Length: 115
Length: 112
Image (cartoon, rainbow over all chains, first blue to last red; front, side):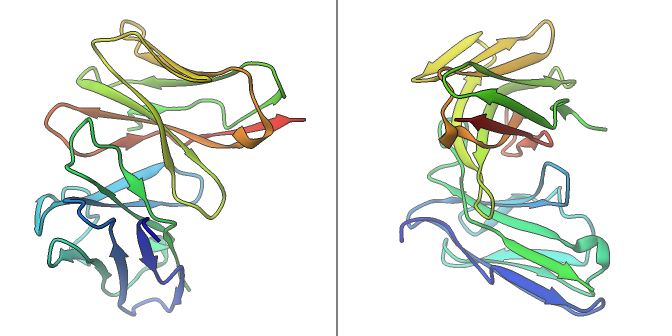
């Protein structure tokens, strides 16, 4: 398919474990974003990549969260020592260039449940 | 501090009638506004946007109105169709930032 692909679609983990979430953006899209949506809340910005660089990582909630992007393509979001408040749907989006005239295309998300 | 507010968690309208979804913002630095639609278990999809230099933008059945003095925008859907039933998110950004600030969403139900 031509859309943004995220894996896994669901992840249940025990508190204290590390998790890794994967995003495959639309081919050729230079900008990549991670958002999360906690229950009953709006989408919350986490980090933005332009190419393999992250000019804005201001939304990462703590140093337990990190993300990388390689080959101007795949991105992984890693959460170390997960806590129950990390439970959320984690959404990845990509856009052709970034900026106002380049709408975000979202994946279907990874639902993370920390028990 | 919630900078983008959608005060109606839900809205129900009859097929063929107008749906009006509202959004308020507090940050006067926001200069670009978007609406996204989300079906269950799917990611949001872009619907329509408006720059702060305009007060109206129209795309087919969808029109977004912006009132900068009131820091208010609205999305009008005319005529509403059952397939429009979804959660609608309002989002805002400011110049130089790639970050979108989202509201909590309004669940629209269009009854046949």
